Structures are given as C-alpha cells and as structure tokens.
Image 1 (cartoon, helix red, strand yellow):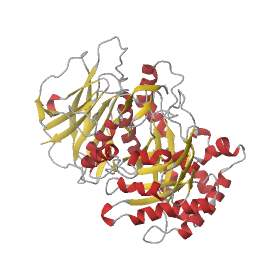
Image 2 (cartoon, helix red, strand yellow; image 1 turned 90 degrees about the vertical axis):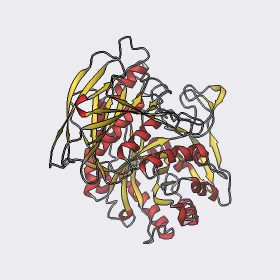
Image 3 (cartoon, one colour; image 1 turned 30 degrees about the vertical axis):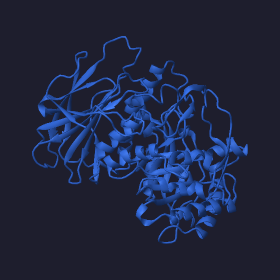
Length: 531
C-alpha cells in the first residue's frame, strides 16, 4: 500500500469558490470539550445479537469493522445492546439458539424487530467474540414487570462477563433496565395514565431486586443507565431528566447507582419534504442539526448538575429503521460528522448510533441480506456483509480524535450556512487538526455545475503556545453525489470490501498554510497541521 502526496496544485475544477476567512486559535479555547477516542459508539438491536458477533465462531466481518476503528482510535467503540427488543426478551437456562418470533417483512419495515425472544446463557456469552477491551452496556426487560425474569437476565449477563478471561479486557459497564418507557402507554399498556411517577416506582423496585443479588463491580454494585426515553416530541414531553429527579429517582438506593443518563434522539421523519434530494438536504443542514440538538441543552444541564454523564444512546438519521435512499446515502456521512462534533460542544459525553440487521441507517450490515432494505422485496442475489456510507463517518471521527488521549475539540466560527468546522487540540492544548464539512448538497439530479468554497486559514495566539503551523496535509472524503449509496473514498481508500478491511492507495495533499483549502459541495476534509 502506498501513500500519494500532492503538493500545492489544483486537483479539481468547479464553479469559482466563495472565500471564507477562517481564524483558528493556536491554544485550546476555554469552551473546548474533551472527547474520548470512543466518542462515537454503537447501539445494537438485541434480537439478532448473535448475527452481529457470531455464536460458536466469530463474525469476522463485524469484528474487522470494529477493529478498523480501534486501530485508528486506540480503543474499540463501546456497545449498548438492547433497545426495543430488550423489553421483549426472556431467559431460559440451557437454551443455545435464540427462539424468536418475527412478523413478516413489509416495504416500510423489511427487517422487523422480534415480537419476542427467548435466550439462554450462550446468547450473552457471544460477547466473547468482541474486540478485546470493548465496554458493554446491556438491556434488561422492564416492560413485563417480572422481577424474577429480570433477575435471571441480569445474572446471566453478569455470569457471562465474569467467565471471560481477564486478558479479554471485556467490561460490563452497566445495565439498562427498560427501553423508551414513555412509549409503554401506546405500545403495551393501552392506558394514558402511565406516568413518570409510576415508572420511577416500578424501575426502582426492579433495580433494587436485581442489584441486591447480582453484584458485578468491585464494590459489589451495578451501575445503571437512567432514562432511555424517546424524545421525538421532546418539547411537550413530561419524560425528561428533570421529571425523573422531581420524582426522587436519584435519592432512592437504586437511583444512587445511576452514573449515566441516556436519551434517545431521532433526527427527522422523511415523509413530507418531497424528493430524496430535498429531504436529504434538509436533514444535513447546519441549521437543522443545531436546532435539533439545542433543544436538549436544559436536559444536559440538569444531568450534569447531578454529577452524572449525559449520553445519547439511540441516534439515527431519520426514524423507523431509516428512510430509503436517505439514511443509507453519502450525504448522511456529512450529517454525522457535523452532528457528532456539535454534540461535543453541548457537553454530550458519548454518542451511540443505533444499528439493527437490515436497518437502512446502519453503519455496518454484518450478515448476508436476502431482502432489500429499500422496499422489502426478495433480492435476486443475496447481498453479502458490507459497510454503508455512514461507516466512513466513524473512520473519520476516529482519525480526527486520534489515539493520544485528552484531545479537545472546539467549533470554528464560520459565517456560512453550509460549511462547518471543528479544531482539535492535543493534551497540551495545542492545535493539531481541523475538520471542515461542506453540507451543500450535490445530487444526481443537480443540473448546475458543482460549487466549491475556498478557506483561507489564519491563526491567533490565544494564550500563545508558540509559532503558528506553516504547512498542512489535507485528506478528503470524496463523494460523487450526496444521494450515492456506495463508492465513497477516504484519502483515496475504500472500506467497501468483502472483509471490511481498507483497500487502495492512501492519498493526501500537502500545502503551505498560505495556499488555503478548496472544498467541494458535499465533501469533507481533515487538515493536519505541521511546522
């Protein structure tokens, strides 16, 4: 494998660029936020869990897809296993193969969630196939209010992790009791009277029973995630952190074991915006991302005041397993890049992007698919395991943060409705990289020439960390069209291979800082500064 370096030359033609002057602080500003190498992590729908990992033998494709990220970031993504199907799962000792009941595929839901799952010890022990050092949070059934069933699930989870050798480094971080209980009213109980107060009472009772008999941490306690509510109607919802705390959740013995509050955010319903290009452009704009995220600032402040971590454990690019041609598009990558790093500016501690076998918004499709994710029809030929466009976002985010630790990120002020930027700072507070994202959509039905912008970079001393960088390398995410569903490259390389391993010659450009950067519509670049 070779690396090609291009020195200070024009590499594309486009409509003459708009020019933006970009000022970057040499020193980390006071509002810079620290981000973990595993800041982008994954939530896995539990019903087909062993499809992801493998049961008797490891699923090499999924393993490779995770270790690609680990090789760049220095640690694997964390996993949250559960979601809706966690509340439909029951345990039966000795059962090897999961017994699941699924509805038939439809055009809107080609891969429906299981209506019920019965699992045994082997289901949880399949976590041994994860990359060493993976941290896991696992969901337990709350909806059925079965204390014995919850105990059996929790014990099987704890026993599985206790059985793994220390050398595996696999860590059970927490249990998550129930999923999106604010939807229990509509989906399960058929009553409008199910309240936060009732939820807190049921949750604390179940957690007290589980934690009393299943010690999994060194101090003989279990850490729990709190919340895990859906937030589609957040502005009018009573299901918020403040409501939980007002109902004395944290003062209960069970609530005192919460060290993380989880919230779920679905990023739009692509049904009323017309064409794919219109919907995709709407969802990937700076204004939409910032408006969607900023609605949660009050919740984040409440959680932080309670000395808990705040994370989003279910994130998806549109609801209902994703929208065809939108959630699985190249434009979704630009949305994810901007979304993730803007979330860091709001003090979100970690993001878990939801995945399910056959879901349109996946980063990874871990097994062969026989049904189209677009319309639910039977495929003429099975589709082998593969990564979808969003996977490139995971790779780029890992590379931007890097593996050195104690990296902080600050949004760059840009007077543009389409161009976003983020600066990255080392543990010493020195600027090292910048990511620029141009979310102006260039689509297959675009009839005008592709536009570009030009960025002129300037450095300000801040607290004066030394001389400004004089050179930079530029690595590009190349996208043909925003509505493409394959064919992307990152630095000239592809991850769209049969084994998820990177392929192709590595390509970067090297410039003097004074040259600036040209950035096409529907493109992103990672800039690394050198003296």
